[in-house]
Image (cartoon, rainbow, N blue to C red):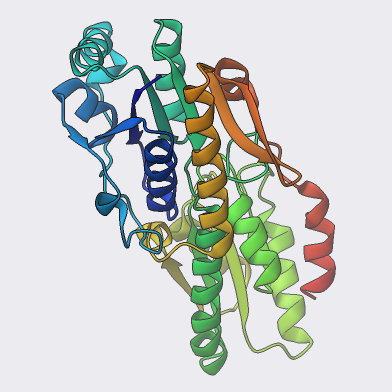
Amino acid sequence: MKRIGILTSGGDAPGMNAAIRAAVRTALYHDMEIIGIERGYEGLIEGSFRGMDLASVGDILHRGGTVLKTARSERFMTEEGQLEAMNNLEKCGIEGIIVCGGDGSYRGAAELSRRGVPVIGIPGTIDNDMGYTDYTIGYDTAVNTVLDAISMLRDTTSSHERTTILEVMGRDCGDIALYAGLTGGADGILIPELPVDLDELAAKLEEGMARGKNHSLIIKAEGVDISVEELKRELDKRTNLDIRTVVLAYLQRGGSPTARDRMLATLTANKAVELLRNDEYGYAVGTVRGEVIKMPLEKAVAIKREADLYLIPMIDMLSR
């Protein structure tokens, strides 16, 4: 393969630029052309292509977001959109593409693969919800962003002797809440993988206050089947605590990627280019126990991530 493309799709994640940089520079090292596809699958349909060179990826390693931009594309979900995308790839002479994104992006990549387009997927999503790989690009940075927020919230929560409910991202996977909550010393953690017991949570908060604690913190993943407002109302009914709510939202997507995310992005993007160079495709690239691995795309998409529920008893033990 001598001409390949790369796109970033779905929600942006810190480290996507590091992946773009590694892919471009690996391709150029092997005398391959690499084309940047802007705004994900939408740009693939519109033919928003631009050639990439060494200068185009200079000084982006440390930057959050994605220089190729990203978007969600309803048109790509249709057969007409997919055929238009394939037609544009053919017209531009792109022989294979690298897709950096999450579960939805991988499903699009798998569809292109089934239609005969050589594709490699690399995992870019802060939720860490892809089961075939230990970590996804952007997850570590998002957890550290939440930890920074916890530190700042703890100051004001302690000063005013309050309880704060902090909502973080994680629609189907509670890893951000779980790991940030454990390492940030949260008193309660609510994740989509477990049912919510409001009575137990309220009793734990009251017990802490009775022992002399003057503040508490609850971390809730957005995918939990209760809103922060409803959670506050229910706890108000069950306790006499002064409760406030904070929703971090898109703050978790931004910021300079951590060293771990930069390394993961670099390793997986480099591997993706090497696979295409050797005419190997239809794979998702990730890491398992520190080793870079490849797995058939359709198999990777089908693997559901299982939460590390063994941490829950530890959280209960340490937060008392």
